[in-house]
Length: 257
Image 1: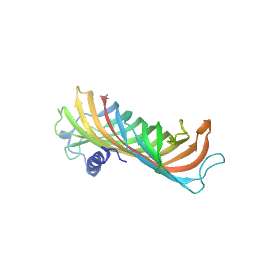
Image 2: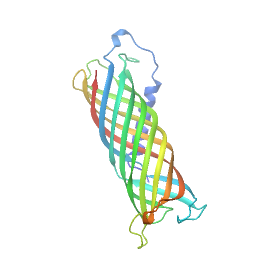
Image 3: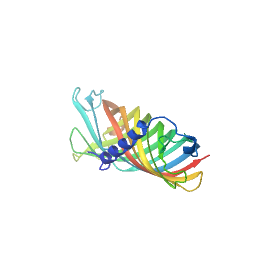
Image 4: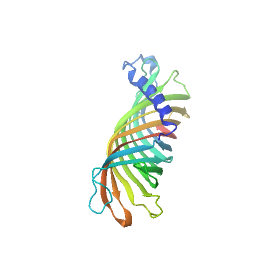
């Protein structure tokens, strides 16, 4: 199960991002200097998480249904959800190769999406719940500038950091008996995140611009828990390993000081 936009967007973004890091860090002459300085950006939009499979081995506590040593494979599908990001950065007042104007920034991003479907060990279950992410990254961004008076400015970049993932995927078997969640996939913890993005900025004034971008994120090294929650219980059943990835479309404003 894979998001219909993830594979196409991922190849495009990684290619652009690689070009940015391949640019030699050799500043051009003073004639190539452009405006720089500190900026703040605020964006919001839609995130489309890739459907994931979390895997582990059952090790149920007393009171939790399950067989010790049996597989625990939970496939989870997501709806599109909300994402937002705030960043503060510094744009260098110079260009590399006469074309690329770099920036460094720190960013906080939030995302959430509802669970739409899933299965446990390939079975027939009804799924619900949601997932939330809080990311903190350091990003490299590069404008593509062929004119100091450019109005439409393409940009691309990448970043690394950490993301806290909180899962609350619940489900129950479609056996005609259960009508409320009997199991949940919770936790997630903090994992390493890599992200890459590309977009366009529209310069309204010397300091204010509108921008839109597509962003790919991948969070690895996450640890989830499958717990038995039937009848109000909260009993451990299995540890699950998994990743979380998403493609987002964001729009917002940037203010340079």
